Length: 311
Length: 311
Image (tube, rainbow over the protein chains, first blue to last red):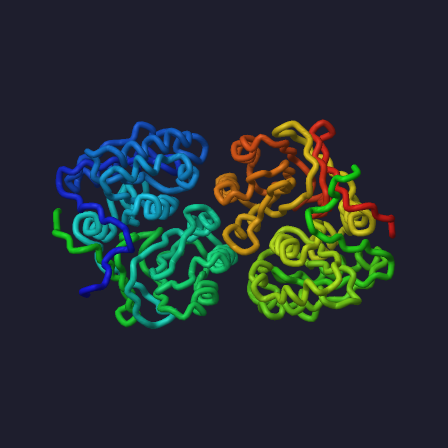
C-alpha cells in the first residue's frame, strides 16, 4: 500500500477513543425520545466513556430538537470543547442542514479534530465537516435510536462494529449483491441519499470524484430514489466516481431496479446490500477513510490509518 | 406600463390558440390512465381543438410512461412539428427530469415557439424550456388528470381559467392568506417545489432573481418542505427574488408554519392560498409572463402581452 493514500485528500483523522474519554451527545436534527436516549447513553457509558449531554438535547420545537440557535450552540460548543473526544449525535430526523449557515466554521476548524458520530440526517454534517473542517467522520448508529437505545438492549453486531470503528478501525462490512463486478480502492464518501441530493447546488454539494460513493436511504419510493440519483447525476456529483457502495434501503419498496438503471451505466464497481444506514444490524463505516470494495468477497473494507486498539 | 417588461427577460410568448388549432398530447412523466385521458382529450376537442396523441402516450414502464427515448421522442417530435400549436402534457408523476439530457435543444430552439401546457412534474420542462428555448409556458391542468378528465366532467372554474390562459391571457387568481404584505410586479417563475429543489445543482437550476417565485406541492410533509426550501435558500435560488406566490399544498399537513419560517425573512411580499398546482379548482398561470401580486386584493394577476381573445 506504499504511496497510496489511506485518507481522503487533506482530511484529518481524529484520534481513537479510549476508556475514560469524554463524549458529548447533541441533537442537531429531530427531537429525542428520553427513554431511548437514556438507554443509548448507558450503552456509551458501558463502553467506558464519560457522557455529557448538550444543554438543549431534550428540547422540542415541532420536528426539530429546539431552535436552530440552540442546536447549533450545542454542536459547536461540543466540537470546540477541548475536553470532548467525540461529538455523538443523538438521532437523525431532520434539521442538521438548517445549521450549516449558522456554524462558525473558522472557530470549529481551529479546534483539534475529533470524532463526529451519526448517520441519516447527520449526512449533512459529515459532508460539511469534511469540506469545512477537513475531518474524517464516523457514519454509524446513534444513542437516541433503537439499534443502540432499544428497550431490549443494543443490537450486538451493531455495537461491536461501532466499538471497533471508534477505537481501532472499522470492521469489514459484507454485502449481498453485486450490480457491477470489480474492485475499487478509494476514500469513502456519501451517506443518506436524500440528504446528499438536498445538498446539491449548495456550498456543501457532494462530489464523488476519485471516491467510493456510499448511499442508503429510508422511506423513499423508487421514483423518489430515481429523482435524487438523477439530480446527483445531472449535477455532476458522480463524475469520476471510483465505485459505489450501497447500504440499506428500508421501506423503499424494491429499489434495485432503479439503483441498477441509474448506477450501472457509470461503469464502476457497484456493491449492494451492506448493512449500513438504517435497519438492524447497522454497522459503522468511516467517511473520509480509505475504503476497498471487492465484489469477489462482496465486502467493503474500511481503513483509517494504522491505529492501535484502544478499548 | 410603458417601458416596463411584460415578459421574463428574453422569453418569447407563443401565440394564442384559436379554434381548429392542432395540439399534441404527450406523456413525458408517469403512465396515463386511458379512460381519464380519453375524457380529458374530449374536453380539449370540445374547446375546438384538434388533438393528436404522441405515439407512446399509452406506454407504461413501471412508474414511467415508457422508456426515456420514447417519451423524449414524442415530446421533441411534437415541439418540432410545425403543424402543432401546443404541446399538452397528459399528466405528471415523475420522469420529465430524466429527459432533460436527452433532448436536442438546438433543434427544438429552431422550432417556432408554441405553448407548453402542464404542471406538477412538468415543472422540470417549464424550467428547462425557459432556459434552453427561451419560451414562456402555461402551468395548468392536464387532460390525464381528474380536474379535466374526471368522470364527472371537467371542473368548471379550472376549465374557464385554462381556456383564458390558452386563448387570451390568464385570469387573475385570488389567494386567501398574506404572509408578508406588499405588491410585487415581475415575471413569474417556479412551479412544483419538489421539482425545483431536484433541479438545484443541475444545468436547469432555478434562479428567482428579479422574479416572483411561484411554489406549490402535493404529498410532502412539512419537514420535507423545510428541507427543499432550505436547499433552494442555500443554493441562492431566492437571492434577489421580487415576491413569492404560494399555490396549493395538498396532503402536506399544515405547511404554513414552515413556509412562513423560511420565506418571511426574505422581506418580499408573500401571498398564499392561490388555487394553482394540485387540488380542485386548479387555475392556470403563465410562467415567464409578467405577474403582479398584490396583498391588498390578495391576488396574482398574470399578463402575457396584449392578446386578442381568440376563442
